Length: 341
Image (cartoon, rainbow, N blue to C red; front, side):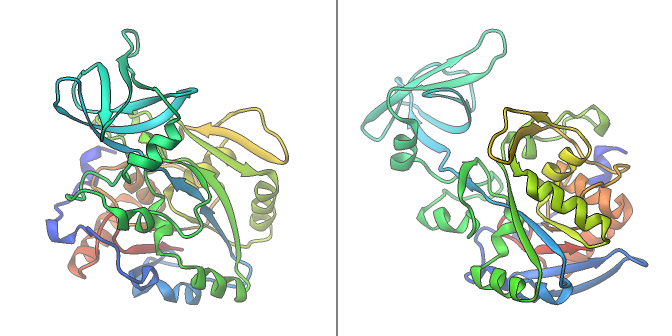
């Protein structure tokens, strides 16, 4: 398979710049895979009508941090930073354009010093004070670059799932943005099991595939945590023929990374498995943990789109995305959703 097999033209007006006021009023494309692929159209609040009592819905409860800092160099020029991950107390790996090194100021405060490793070329911001305090005071939500507007206060709520509890992501697990607390309660009342894991979304999820041959692409590892009880529950559910449905590609990568033994384990305590996974799911992959997926409509040639095409096949994915465009679906993070069963 080639990267270009999953490209398509997307008009600017199809990209959602804001979410709908009612999260669950977004559209939902329903793709039934058996006995043959059938496509239907609904509203996300209708989700329970397509799930059955005894289904297990697994969601990613990672919380987005305000990881974007718009500051100034010592020369007075602007610098736009995205914090990627901490690599030592008071020090974060960062992304920004150019090769500037030196102090960075935000507002009236000099917050730290940027250095670049000669060996790895990694850029790091060494904070002069508590990074959490700096982000709370100055940080902006790290909206994707295709949303062509500055992040604002509304995004602090909009770009966060209602069940986000564990800080660490630099991008939202966007399939979960459609859920409201009311909808989650309705699903529970119907007898649908709901459980959570954590995968902190990093650059690995969104790093562009630079090679035409997708097998040459390497995902960057992302950190996760999941209870051993949930892992065992998934094993039991699948042995009983009950469905496990992942909410989002990040949830999917966590579960498939574990069940495919494609993960690195960290010291684990209190019934929780801590680790990281660099699993890259693309057509030809045999799913071992999930039976269905709730997801958004993704960027051309992106790794989340390749994961979707592993479930549906490349030709069907292209056909379904063509229908989504014809039907006026809203694309990307603040857009509409798809349920694949």
